[in-house]
Each structure stands twice: as structure tokens, then as C-alpha cells.
Length: 314
Image (tube, rainbow, N blue to C red; front, top):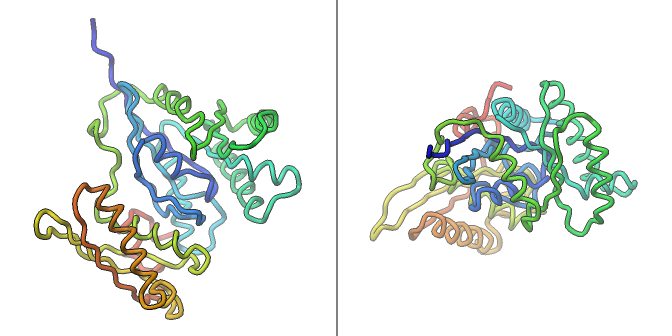
């Protein structure tokens, strides 16, 4: 009896900012490979997570959100999202059900309207590329099934999709069915990563992303889209511990005290939360040291883009 053949390929997850792409990728992988916050445009560059289903390996590409860019960083993020889709064996378009239904009912907030517009842009892009995506309608919690079915039918009729899944990335509802479908879509071939590997983000970059996540979780309203984190040292310490030094960059002097907080309390919270999670993820003690600096044009520095695999010349 012949051994079952292995399968491996790429599945790109496209969606408007805050559609739930990182939450879905983490759910499919079964481990945290991408940071998640309530802030839109959290993911700045493609992050790969590896999911296994039997003999099939799905390399999930969590792409930055697709939206109308204005700044260089935003243009680079959108280009990275489309590049991830072009290179993938299958594309998943994640749509926010609650935003779509709110706009349809004439009750949508400005953020909902932008999400719907961005979703339409993705559909047009998929069709222009001569492809069809798998539509995953997310955030179905608490929504009546008849409304979801009507929404799925309306979106399917656009011609951009080959099939539809109703899911909740947050609770996991419907995600296993989607995962099985992605596994079946992977081409035959050797695995691209070891079976026990969940992602490909270098540990230095992962550490910076975890700290950036904690900044946004703590300062969602106070700090605009204006912070970057660089891991400046990642070295072995005593008794198997890891010493991590990081610099948090903000764009204006007025933002520095926001990150520090009264008596340094906010920075201590960020550091403690990041240190704890990093220690759990890496399975070792972590000593984390944070510094906050003002760098007005950090988002215009070429080295920032090349360091995370973004195209600077956009």
C-alpha cells in the first residue's frame, strides 16, 4: 500500500483592515504567529503561519489590509498584500459580516463604510487578476442566519468567489471546515517547513511585533498610527535566559510622555506584558529593556522597510 502523498502550498488571506485576518491565521495555525489588536492596519508586512491537516501543509500568508493608501508606509503595505495574493495557490477574502450588514441597513459607521469599500476594491482586484477567491464571511456571532445567507448570496453573485464559508475567527465556528478546504486546495509536493514549525518570523522581529502589539493594546486611543519597535539586542544571558533590548520610536516629542506614562507606569506595563508573552512563546526567561525615542521620519527610512521585507520604492 503506497504512502499518502504530501501536499504543500500557500494560502493568502486578504481583507480590509480589522476584518480579522490575523485572528483567523492564528486560529488556523493553532498558535500565535501574528499580532492582534483592535487598531486597524496592525499588520504591516506579510506574516506566514504554518497549518497542518493530515499530510497537507498550508502556509498561510497574513497580509496587511487592503485600503486606499496615502503615505509611503501605507502604499508599501498594500503592495505587499497584493504580492502575497499573486504568489498564492489559493486566496481567501475575509469579509466583516457586521460591517457589510450595517452599511446595507443604512446604519454603518464611517469605519464600516470604509471596510465595505475596501472589500469591494479587493473583489475588483481579484477579478482583474483573472482569479476567484474563497469568501470567508467573518464575525457572524449574534447575526441571524437568514441575514448571513442573503449576504453570502449577494456577494457570491459578484463573480469574485468560487465558494463561501461562514465563520467566526474569534470563536472558531466554521474555521475547521475552511481549513479542510484549504488543505484540499494545496498542490502535491514536499512540505515547505518542518511539521512542528508554526511560523517563519525571525525571533528578533517577533519580539518587536509583540511589544508593538502591547503598545497598541494599552494606547489604542491615545497614540495614533505613529509607533515602531526595533529590537536592537537579542543575546544570551545567564542561566539560559534571553536579554532583549528594544527601542520604541514615536514621531513627535509630545508622544513620548504618552508611551512613558506617569512615572513610567505605561512603559512598565508594556514591558511586563511583552516580556511575559515572549517568555511563554520562547519557553525561556526573558529580560526585556525598553527605550523610547523620537524619530520624526521613521516611516520614511529605507532601512525600516528592508528590515521587514517591504518595498521602499512605492
